[in-house]
Image 1 (tube, rainbow, N blue to C red):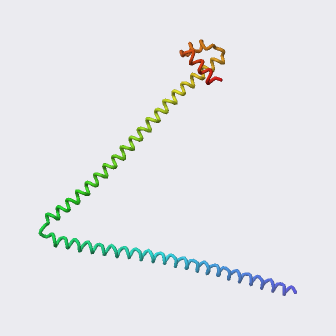
Image 2 (tube, rainbow, N blue to C red):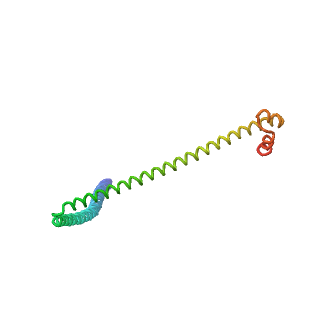
Image 3 (cartoon, rainbow, N blue to C red):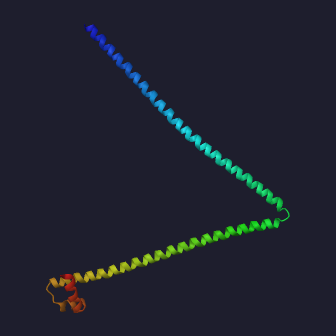
Length: 178
């Protein structure tokens, strides 16, 4: 009886170990197959890119050949008039230089507009700062007047001490202090 139990336990553990190894192999083959499928996707994409590049290179080669033919035909028709050909070249260079100068002029105009806007912004900021300072001075006056009123000083005494008019003291008292 004990012998049967031991044999059953040994067979069970062997079966478990064999199944465990089989599962590892299955997982490995699944991962391997997935990676192979991914590689085929990449190969397809690489093939498409190669095809596009080869088509563009072919088009460029055709354009180069066309340009060579044009240059040869122009040279053959203009053999007697090399001066005209040079004039055309100089004219094209002048057009290029003029366009460059116009671009530079536009850049300078844009920069000057930006500088003008920056100067306007600075002036506006300075005006705001000066207004804030004035408001701050008024705030100081308000604080002083409020403090003097709380101390029980009369409007005449406050006006004399701060060197301001009685009307201003009364106005501040009525508007701000209450």
